[in-house]
Image (tube, rainbow, N blue to C red):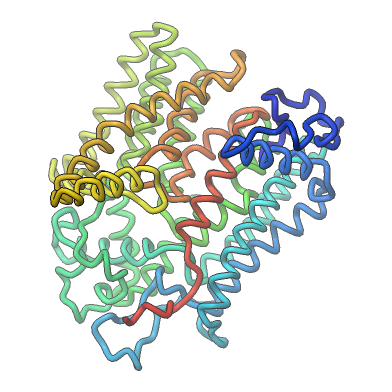
Length: 505
């Protein structure tokens, strides 16, 4: 969904005013390749046509974006999401009442077979709306970024009062904060340490009640603050977390508005991006915090060559890692860019500051804070090619009565191969950028995007790091692919309302 209408041959439209023509005249169906390559070609052609449609007009693009956001808000208002704030798992199913936020739960509740399709429709509309906004911008539309910021601020102010939609993470955040406030170590204990009758334990998704935290110390401290303010009510704690997260999302948007080379494009890529508004704000995910620290670090690093800038950039990346460790990919990208220009002194400064700050933050808990991260690194999401590989090996060895051995080999192969493939994909992505683009931005983006594409466990809100870095760059074809990957993950890993029919089975 790139705002620079990419042609199937790989080039880009050089003038925003030149609209794409019908591709069938140049690429007759009889000459198209077959198989996956043909599907990819047809997808590119479809996107290319949309770039010249009425979707690329400002009014239509804004309307479609708002429709997608309103639909997801409707789901949160009318259908508290089973996979976000699930009801009591241990009580009588007839008396189960899901936790809700202030604007939810006051009207009727949609059945699951209505709320699920509404959620997926909302995601598709958000994708189309984002594409339309960026295409309209490429055709010369230059909205006032301050007006965009104010309009989205109003949307966010409403959205943080609605039950989050899309995952159960918000309830887990609240529980980890409550666990820490009661003197338990959230890195060795799951929410069940509070007792099965504790409302925080009951509010967590069933598969996560015994899972320790995988988030960094800074995330734990934010969760503790919210839990302290929320007291014994997990719903109130989640509400505070939603408010904090919404405020950080807007703060990132304001930072980009003030510092980006193109504030209009940066605003459309982040604060007015309907896909991100749902994933980060409506979903309540703390990836927003990591993105906030990362964008500050990248902007500091690319703005000059003074040694103190790389110390500050390393500190910013270290803070981001103290929320989610995957932010280290940005630090690795900055280091890679410095190594390419043989700037060893500044590379050393960046490394000392970044690693030192991570060590400092994690020293409050110790090395065991990484234990659950290592455990989680073996997880494989579905759908994923890595999952297919593991199932194939398990099934093949099962023929000889050694299914467990096949599963172990598949897990080991996945752990070895995916980091290697990630580097290969990152290099290919980096080469898609023109040489005049700053490597201090393109290399971190390439690593973050490659990780989303290749990692065995990848979720749509993980794309926050890639989006915030890409917002610093001018028009480029990678925007289309990042949008498609993010929306695909959202469709595969987002649920809309509940309780689902299998919730109490």
